Image 1 (cartoon, rainbow, N blue to C red):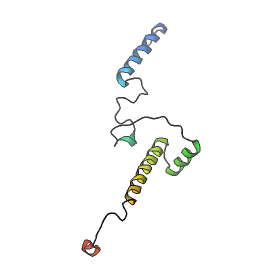
Image 2 (image 1 turned 90 degrees about the horizontal axis):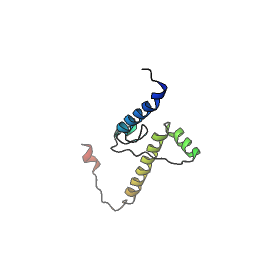
Image 3 (image 1 turned 120 degrees about the vertical axis):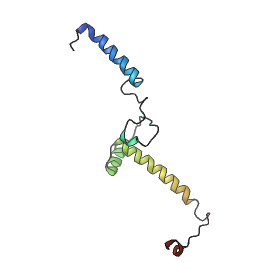
Image 4 (image 1 turned 90 degrees about the vertical axis):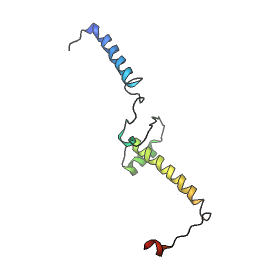
Length: 107
């Protein structure tokens, strides 16, 4: 379709209006998307954040994981959660009575 130069501003306004209707605030807005990324397919809600992370720490973490920024951050946050849970379990050491008969369980 050929558009005259004077009609171009109206075309941009129409496109902007369609984007607002489709995405909420624009094409880069996350509202209305329940699963915008592959790694979040198991997560009910995704929160888009901006974080200032020292470049050397992020690069080292990405090298260790072999993944991109988002997946590296997700993996790091999961590790932090896992460590906190393990710490809570360690505090129960000696406080829970546990009996297990290995011979009986092997039968």
